[in-house]
Amino acid sequence: MSKKLLRSGAIVSAMTLISRVLGLVRDAFIAAVLGAGPAADVYLFVAKIPNFMRRLFAEGAFAQAFVPVLSEYQEQKSKDEIRYFIACVSGTLGTIVTVVAILGVILSPLVVALFGTGWFIEWLNGGADGEKYELASLMLKITFPYLWFITLVGLCGSILNAMGRFAVSSFTPVFLNLAIISAVVFISPHFEEPAVGIAWGWFIGGLVQLLFQLPFLYKANMLVKPKWGWKDPGVVKIRTLMIPALFGVSVSQINLLFDTVIATFLTTGSVSWLFFSDRLLEFPLGLFGIAIATVILPSLSRQHSGQSPQQFRNTMDWAVRMILMMGFPAMLGLMVLAQPMITVLFMRGAFSGNDVLMASYSLVAYATGLVSFMLIKVLAPGFYARQDTKTPVKIGIKAMIANMVFNVILATALGYEFGYIGLALATALSASCNAFWLYRQLKADGVYQFSAQTFTFGIKAVISALIMASAVYYVNPTHQAWLEMSFDIKVLELFKLITVAAVSYFGLLAAMGVRVKHLKSETLK
Image (cartoon, rainbow, N blue to C red; front, side, top):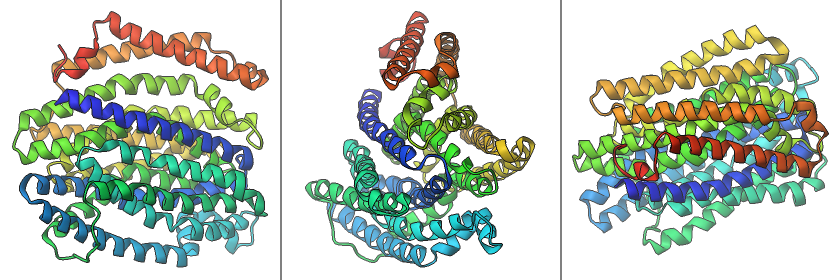
């Protein structure tokens, strides 16, 4: 089983790598055009809202509720019953999300007032930032329909993932990145405000992603005519599981929205600095955390349905071990290389050296919680695979409350200019609380706890990552030196530092006795 998981995880990671690299290219294009000024703040604010809704309706809460039920159908039902179930789910979900998307377009000024309260107050009082509110209301009308497309994309991807076809859904986001890059290059120059042209990239990208997945669903004989099925037993079960999962799986996204609300009260650039630092955090999180979570959920669901508790624990342990191996070096690597990476990726056009410095501070703060973010991704499926969505929502609510408290304390302590760093640190701290509470409950339920072998593996990963980070810090040029380098030299220097990091980390792991076979076995020898 673990060999199959490792192979599936490698496929998802490879496809995700392509998508994430293009995502960074996309963000570099946007940074060059918009910088970190008012238009950038508005664009990045507007992009967050459909992304947040996507986590609720598409690959987030819906997937966590849908995949276990579909896996149960695959174990116990005929193919015709599975197809009817998918028809009911697609018709019901499609109808609901259509209504939500239409309301989102119509009520966009209200949505912006809710999440961009600082700009709304400025607009009411005739302040300078009132223009941000007006621009955000317009752009949200363009980006909100993306929710409709991406929800159906999430449904298609979940079906394919449950069938063991992970590559298609993992590669699909590539088309969104290509659409937005194309919008930056070909559409935005035709608008007085380039950000409006870039917003159309989300609409086009959502459409292309859906069209890409439909042929694969047809080939799998799972492309069915949608049917309203609110009272269908399978849909009822998904509804029951999904409602609490809306909170449990989306806590980190809700926390980011809270950050955005508070950031609209802070200095101009705060929303942009948080966004660009979060984008770099999302790279390893997607490459390892989300990729591993994607492949284990169908396996855990089948193991629970097949009443195989030991295999369930082995799968969880394998996932945690993979997170520890990749999470600690990624966390420390982001902290040490924050300024170099942001310099190489984003410092051009309107994105200045000061923006690099400010964004690097929030990246370091976010990075302190990277391992926790990753652990949440693999611990939460331990509940969802057992069709327990109530426990994660209780933990999620506690984590949200903790985040709000941390936000107020840290943002206030750091003040108007640097309060955004407090927001990033608060998000990281609340994620650590979330991961700890999830693990504690799994252990209390007798479902999973770290094996002695995994604990030892984690110690080796921490030691190796600390030594790696020290070596990279020692050879890393100063911030001023980075600013003075040509772009070619910057790229070469960053490549050298990443090479030093990779060779030193995996070399140290090997010196401590870790071998590839240990990652394939169900316990670390």
